[in-house]
Image (cartoon, rainbow, N blue to C red; front, side):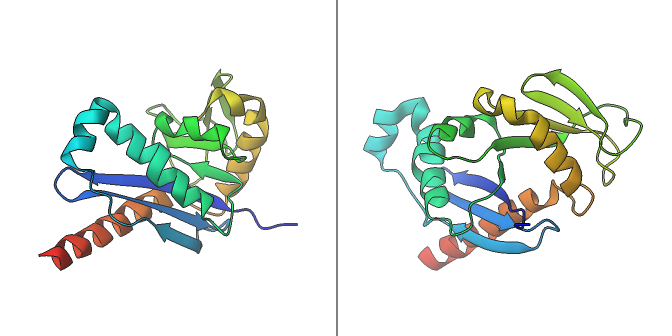
Length: 184
């Protein structure tokens, strides 16, 4: 059986320093398989004027995330994304994009128990966290939701599914700090 790969992506932006993105691919226990990050992107004044409010979304999805995901050696079986803006990239990439987060609800009875909220959202009890895990996918991946719930429940037995996202953010903050320090 092929090893399951879980991806975590995030983009950090600092109006003065610029934007940087990173993606971490882990195995089923959360051990890193691959990590990539972008160079620092600092849009110029003209770009800021021309793109207006859409600049951050453009940088996040069309520029940084697309570059990171295209260059991966290890394509993930699912990609954990911090927000729904990344769903637009499902047209380009052939793996499910999933938002995961703690649901502010009472625990369900047992590991793997599911409460469907809609065709693209569900609550899933994972043994490693008290409250259920909220799973959201885009409409394109809604038909795959049953398989994703099974996969996520299985992975929830061997790893904390939320923790690697914090590692990506921490790594990007370190890289951004180093880059800012080097530029002085």
